[in-house]
Image (cartoon, rainbow over the protein chains, first blue to last red):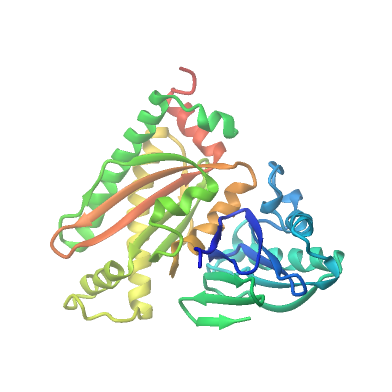
Length: 161
Length: 208
C-alpha cells in the first residue's frame, strides 16, 4: 500500500480507492471531506478562510470554503464521480486560544465551519458526520476504500467518523 | 508591502532584520537567565521567507507536540510572537520555576501553566523592549495564551490572520537552550507586512 496522499494548508487533493488522503494539525482551519460512495472517489480540502471576501489574494481556491467545494467536485467528476452519490464530513474549526474573541479575527474556526456548511448546502450535499469546534488540534485521514474518516487529537485520541 | 516585495528583500535588509533580532534575543536571554537563575544561551536568529503553507515545517513539522505561548502585538508594530517548548522542556521549566526536582511535573497544573505564560511574557517583553527602542516605535504585547498541542494547530490562527493579506510569511526564529537541564525552546516572530515596512523604514534600509 502506498503512503497516503498529503494535503497541506490551503490545499486540496482528490483520488480514488484504494488510496488514503491525510491532512495534519488542523487548528482553526477546517477539513472538508467529500466521498462518492458509489464510485469510491473522494477528496479532502484544508481551508483557512470562510470566503474569498476575507482575503486580498484569491487565486487559490483551496484556501476558502466557498471555492474549495466546487473545485473539489469538478476534480472528482473528472475521475468519474457523480454528485448525487457524494456526501460530506467536516472536521476542525477549533478555538485554540481562550481569549481569541478580543482578536480582530474573532472565532474564525466557527466561521470556517459555518461557511463550509453553507457552501455544502448550496451544492445540495449532505453532511453525514462532523467533528468540529472544541479547543484542540486534529489530524484527519480518509480511507477511499470505504469513506471512513479517522480523526486524531492529543486530547481525545482517535475518533472514527 | 506585498508578496513580491517580501521576496525582493535585499541581503542588506535581511541583515538588518537579523541584527535587530539578535539584540532583542540577547535581551530576552538575559531576562530568561535571571528568571531561572541559570545561563540560557540564544542562537543567532535565522530568517526564513517562506510560503505560508511551509511555515509548520520550520517549526519541527505540523504534528510536533509543544507548549506554545502565543502573544499578539499591538501598537505601531503588530504581528505575532510564538514561543514554543517541547513537552519535556515545558515540564522541566515548570519544575525549575516551582523549585521542584526536575522530572516532578507529569501534568501541567494551573500554576505551572501560569508560570509558563509568565515566562513567555517576560521573554517576549524583553525582546520587544529592545526592538521598540531600536525602531523608535510603540509595541504593546497582549496577554499571552498558552496551549499544549500540535504546533501546526497552534500556528494556524496566526497563519490565517496573515493569509488575509499575503501568501508568504517572514519567520524570524531564535533557538535557546539551558545546557544543564537541557531546557530548550524556540522563539518565532511573524511580523505582518505593514509592521515589517515600519521596521525597515525606521532603520533606514527601505531603499537600497
